[in-house]
Length: 277
Image (cartoon, rainbow, N blue to C red):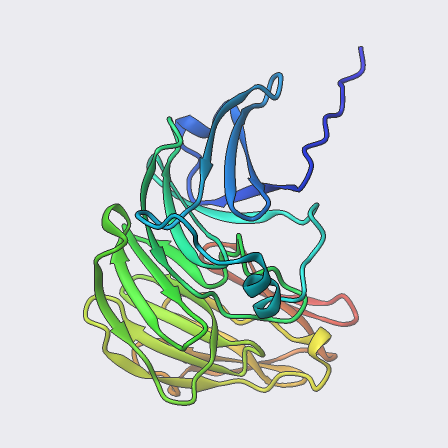
């Protein structure tokens, strides 16, 4: 028999980052109306638990009118949401908070108010560009330019907070003891030390004038790599941002993309289809 297709109105599948732990082996996660997580059994779609993502202790989060005014652009419901997993804990953001949910039971573990950065044509809810988990730490950047670090198990207790004037970060990633924060165009990238919040410096990259042709930046072997010109990729030391790790690598045509086919391998693609490793 052919498998039956089931529609879940106003729901987006949640794609999780991190190692797939046992609670995810037999279930799928859905993000419903950008404010409820549902766990359903893969085999038959049976609802295992729902978790409404409210700020704990608050009856009303925000009016729908306020939300629509702040975030007028929404992507299609079929676009996946992103979540982060640490052990048996799921962390996901809404338009008003960051929330931790137990994967086994759907129990809400903690939540805190959070205003995600806004980017055109991107739904700010269910986005892992502005939140990240690394070595048990939850790292986030908000629309006010605040970088915050907390432990995953106690996400309401912020260990440290930083802000750099005139920076508008959209993305955050981590490797080792380094935090890497980029603006919307991936032209300015700041580096902080995870352990104590020290601002180590800034790298600048040269992106194409057409936003749709923007090239990724990638972190490999404690270096951050990004476009130095239309046909060159530079690698900067994370510990001393601005200091080149190795001479810029040149490709035969304009850069198409930078990506990591493996954890310790950097690939550079140009617009003719050529790739350098």
